[in-house]
Length: 521
Image 1: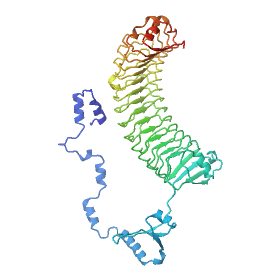
Image 2: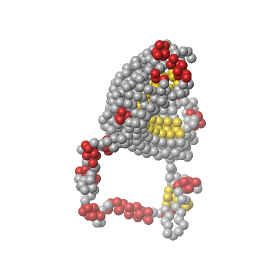
Image 3: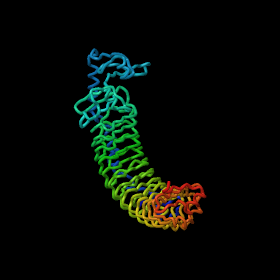
């Protein structure tokens, strides 16, 4: 069985040594030039071939003089009718290049004109003036009287309500439906927040770049016409959408789709724009995130925070381009996706879940920010190569850690380590902290002293020890950690059980030009 390309790429990352079995699985996942590829292994080949006519059938049809006889007979009849018609029935009112030029020349809908010619080699065509719809926006309200416009027939008042947004020239009211038109293309911003809108539609909305529909009462977003290619941002926050699956494909150039604060339970649209980069589905009702279609290949941000997800394990691989995966404030107990992780992922947000142990088996080699605050973690000991060697910040605030002592050293790239609001009684990890570490936070733990055996990193410039039960005796006696510190740092030691003021720790840090925040300040 073939191995996925993402898995293979994961075996050959810088610094790794693929095994013999991995080499074999890699090479046997591809066709060699000397091998014949069976038709059964070519996707949809049988279906495509079955849709084609046999050559003998095509040749017979091509040489059949009676093929499409009815079509050609009807066309010939139209030609004959035009030849035999009374020429006086066609009043040609001039020569114009196009419909707009004819209307400018005074022609009206239904008038005939001909297109210009400059040489005998060219042809002139008969054309008729047609009415082309003006750019139009149609808003449906549950109750139009709540739209915030005193006189709903006054376009000036509507334009004031649309302040900072596209302006219109006419308004027509029919019950709770307001139709707005303008003679030129839409301006870039269409801002319609908090107006009591229940439905929206457009005709010729070319020029619109941003459509904001936040805080309305839309239950289904489904325009009758395709939105313009110019649209790059669509925000429908805080509405009442349960299912998001527009009949008309969204514009290919849409970069941002924000559905935050709706009632979506299952997110599985038939398609999403190929250029979508930012998908926000925060604060909905999603329990399982498992779309049946692949997400756009250019997606960089996937925000699913504040849903009801218990297990994040989609059956599809997430896009290779994904940079930020936000899963905070869900109900996730264990994070261990079965699919290969995303080699470009830089930010993983899992704060505010129910995670007890964090030890995923998927590699995250580009990860820079890991947010695990406000979970149920007791022991933090992931395999270091899983976290990669670009990790800059680890946030473990508000967990249930009693002893922070990972079995392997943290990546040397870690600059910020947040361990506040845990149950740590002594901070004394076996392995030295990252030499890149410049910010160590241990506030609101149960530390009666602070004196780790391993020398602290020479780049450590900020230490937070606030709200711990550190005594004056320990501020005086436990000072071995100070020697390795650089000059000009900052210590927060306020709200400890006994003050740092006047102690040996204070005087040694002041000698290194450290600023100290104590309870006396």
